[in-house]
Length: 299
Ligand code: GLU
Image (cartoon, rainbow, N blue to C red; front, side, top):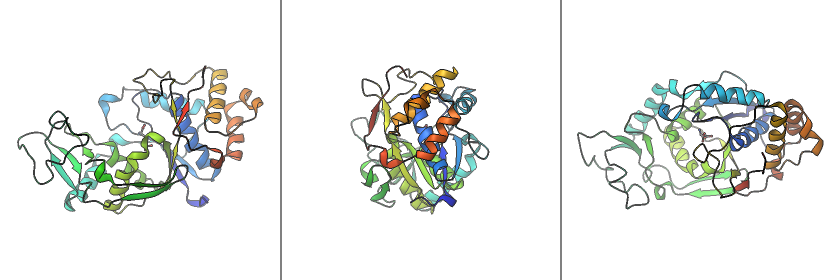
């Protein structure tokens, strides 16, 4: 059972484009889980990769959340302002021998499924820019946890490779930033898409190495296109609706995508009414543990 008093959840979008139906389902699942537990729900803008994040997309996302009635608590945070904290974490990993500089290019190891660790014991080519990688073989392994939907999980991160923590262009990588910020914001519950389930083992290694707590995890089924692809900007997923009646319909469909069986008449209701019903009835027992869900036709 969730400990209501200390529940802190978050929605952490990358502002590479406006929210689409798939991101609505993730935001809604995280919001409902927090609200049903009487918890706090935060929004964190994960803008560590400015070239991928067009100016103004963060405000578009916040406006979209408000239009769907997904109001957050506390101040919104932005990852671009957190460089010092990420550097501090990297320094801590370096001092334990768990991070190393790597000058290899993707092209050099393209014949391998994962980076083969050539720079683990010293940079292969000096005078070249370096990325910083995690020693996934030396950090805690295997990593196990109980996913609230998908149950017991066991991964050996060493078989997934030495993930990049800081890129050659000096930009911070998602794995490090997410772990540092979830801890900084005392997040108790991470609720996000199934596509991130296999990133969780690296995050678990980083939490252990940095002495940070591991939150509970609930990975939600991903919304996929007819071709089975995750909705994304790359496959032209349309942005969420803006007209009031379309917003009502999409919110209702998002509740259905989370297996919450809302009564049909709720589809006509304003977001606040739909959400109040959904908070009162939120049940993850109803969620079927499928990795994927089809996009509703005419969403
Ligand atoms: N920023 C990530 C994304 O938009 C989500 C991070 C997370 O929820 O851990 O895919």
